[in-house]
Length: 316
Image 1: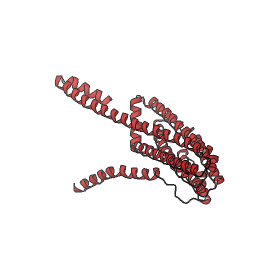
Image 2: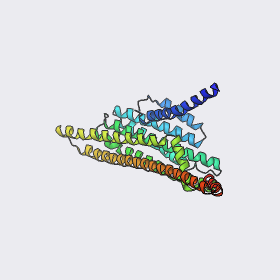
Image 3: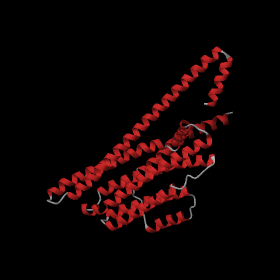
Image 4: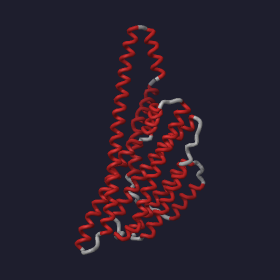
């Protein structure tokens, strides 16, 4: 008996500690400072591993990992003032996002229930991976703004930065569309209602800590965008004082202001979704409480009604 009690205590502690560990791991990935040492040999090994990976979802994970290394390459090149190397690294990064986009486009062709549920779980994991990578891009933009590149050099790579953000946005949109299709297929196969399917997705998101990831990513994106904008505005006065042209800086400020606006919109949407989720959970709890009270009332009226009520409860 004592052994069973100890085992139950260990299991309870594991369930308590596990979410904290998951959140710590996620926070480390999201706050990635892109300081890792990267060489062409290291990227080559990663690409070799990718070539011998045949599962599409695992390929996506590895391609996003290599995309992270390309961001680090671009950061190091920017610190050395090498715009050509920055452009090359960003182009390689964007090609990887294109490959991820193409893979996502073909991974939802499942038809049996277990495979559909697995696809749904993969879609939630994909959203999390995209969110984390977008935080890395935001951090990269912040680092780039305080790097050694001149305004003229930055202007040369601005189009690559814009393309990088566009491809990330396209990937997020595709993931949302695919997840909706997988949800529809799950409803068709299991005869679930949409509310039940949404509840299943919510459970998957909770299990993968997606809600917390979204909140932290929103904070990172906003802080990085605001810091980059602040540094650019500080450079305007210094450049003007030196009698130099500020048109290139002003163009970058306009882009930075756009990023801040987008980051604020994203942060507000995440807060609104969290509020709606809390409200929905409160209403659900209220409905359960109300259902319990009604069940008690009906059982006091007649045992037949009580049995009927139990059957309905089981169906729900």
